[in-house]
Image 1 (cartoon, one colour):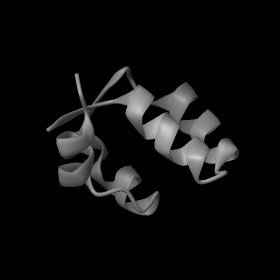
Image 2 (image 1 turned 90 degrees about the vertical axis):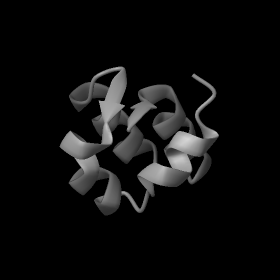
Image 3 (image 1 turned 30 degrees about the horizontal axis):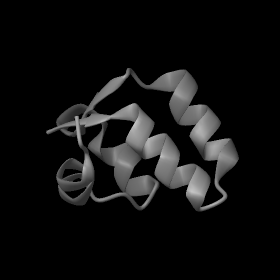
Length: 57
């Protein structure tokens, strides 16, 4: 699944996890491949299937 980085950043910032959001912004591409970056998403407590469903892009 492909997920927009903007969505991930938005969720992290809503949670008050600005440091993690800054890290994601620096390290990941604009379109995040959950197969390639699934471990990082899991570490951030983000479910790729829920993100994909919420992603308007």
